[in-house]
Length: 433
Figure (cartoon, rainbow, N blue to C red):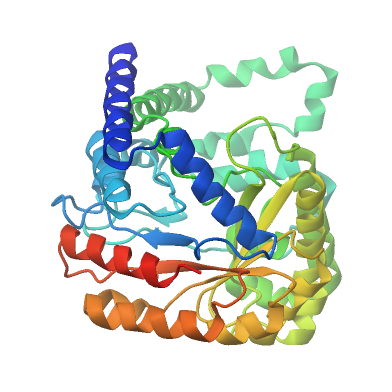
């Protein structure tokens, strides 16, 4: 482990020296230039250039399958760093993957990943289910921690099935020693062995991947998200991780009060785990990525959005702001005019990322109040560099004036690393104020 980390440190040191030789600036100087660009956009001031977050593809020029993110962490790390250095985005993200071996050992039921249940070149997939039954709201609300340990975890991890046989957690207050005999059962012994193996595999994976986000920071690239804050939308967690889409959509008609109570309970758990942003670490203000999906108009009406979705999401984002974070909700799919909800947050204290919504319309709704990150059609990934560049130029011409905007950039897939680099260079020139 020490040898791996030492080698990674040497590689990062060499790359830092290379960056300084090529640019005449230290990675710290480049980092602050990019961070200021982002900071100005968030605070609705006009930066020197529109900040770019680029959707690179670590495997595009490395001949790696998607499964490498789960089974070849060292190779994936190397490819991702090379991709970032080639494109030089204003924000860069580390890998969100984990050990495929660990997932297999745990016998995960609510996700599928390339190289495991899926072929090597498939994308990661979430698997929804009614992991909390329709008649279990009262049990969950009475003691969420007990529900998670004795009901939820055994259902989504096959290897954790023995946890369902544990007595209620509150019984342990009377003396843990009275129940330790249960751990002599063969199934608990097997569980202990499995957890030890899974933990070792995860440690091995993380050692090989290294602290990728911190390494990218040391190379001069601010993170897209710093982590922290008060969590995702409580309704999304309830819907996707507990009741499933079908269950939650029926519940808002059949037992709406329980849905609201559950969202509030989830919010309280998220707030209890939240901690203040640390201003003494690189990158201020700290940004928090919050993916949103069930609030889309394809899933619920505006009335249901206002009743079940927005109230607890708003509270969680206000808590994050009070803790020193900048919430960055990503409005997946077609939220439409529901984007106006962001006007209820303090001016210049949040960022709204829009995926399938028209970026020009989003700027019209939030301009002068909330910075937006504009996404682009996924079809651009199958276009030519010239077509993609022309699309971005047109978009910048329509809504890039005056600041308050950042762009997510999708690169054409069937292009060389050199062509992608040249396209990004031209885009940066055009995006300069």
